[in-house]
Image (cartoon, rainbow, N blue to C red; front, side, top):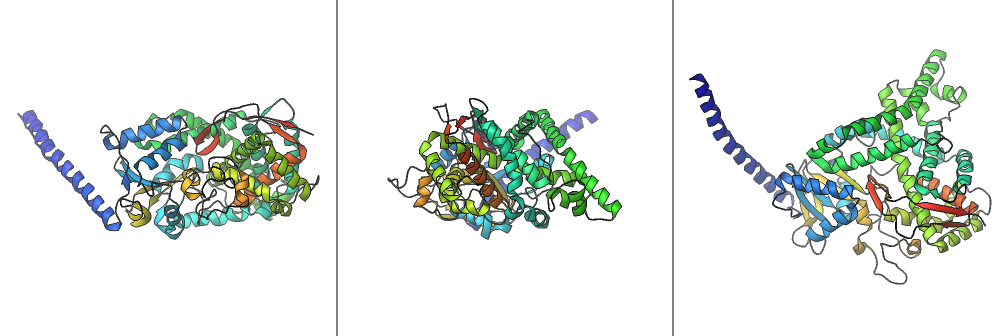
Length: 520
């Protein structure tokens, strides 16, 4: 009898709670819609199939497209198909109960990154997802904690502190002969090794020396981590489908790489305390680490191994691929357009001849700057990014039938934005002419007659979170290109087809770029 009563009670409870839950869900949806309308209104909605229950089908499709490295065509196609006819660069959808706005509109990105910076943050979900890789850092935190990390790291990223020509040239003397040591070399691998060596030496005073001793395990780990996080950001609750064991193995490989640097930091701190001297003096005199390095300053402020590890990893992750990929793409396009190599060499030899360039010399080479700018236009270092609204707010474009009205952004709304799609919007460029080639083409000459608005071109982002190391990155890449073109007269690429683009967090060549370098 008691069992029968229990069964009936459970049945009646289910019959009451199920409709009640549905009613509450409907009310919550109506309330959320009302809030959006009060703040400004919705954007044009992304239309999905009737089988897109709770947005799961959409998430699955976006994962499938990124696995095919079809991100540019997929996301660009969605915006053009479902966005407003006059201004199609903002749409919205819902996935697993969360409203998501997708935008490549320059006005929206300007508001999000500057004037309404305080209304958007990385958010707790982002911090949780990236904690195994980045820990607490300038890239994962918000508010005062973020300001503290930025205050610590910013002095280390000044160009005048990091651009040590003697150190950089020492690395170049290893790198340059390798370019002609065989019939062809893989551009992305060689530039990555060079960048790892330069960044580890510049920031830590401890060269990784991967040019002489290649670390394929580390390179593979970085590649795997980027692929994992690229999928994870699109997966939502479908993250359970990802290969978590491979992810943990890659994290362990990265940790193993930075362990010796963490150990040196602790040794500097311990010796400075026992001797009664400063960490700066101990680092310079006993460990031969340059004064002002990240490693030396970490030793002065903390003995927490996790904090030290997180800051070291952040510096490596932030710089290595963005600069090495930019150089790989630049060298590829130079190989495909020999007239650019000829013009660059003329500018280089007219400016510095055979001598080593200084930072001031590099500023005088305008066409070199145009070449790097053009690469960054087509291949921005962080093609896709996102924020979550921390307060009720609005964005200026995307609403109404014409897409020119504001849209409401209640607290908790996710906003995904794309520098890549922004840079490739044909509407932001002058009409095609003999003076202005197709925006899809690599044509540095366009910069001689064209200056983009600040919000139509922002490879290093804008606002308070813009890349603090952009000056160093530009100087470093320019120096490397000058030294290559001082040494080699021709760069050739045997491949006829475009290598394709791979969007694992950053834009790298899908197929290996094989290049050969030839002296006069």
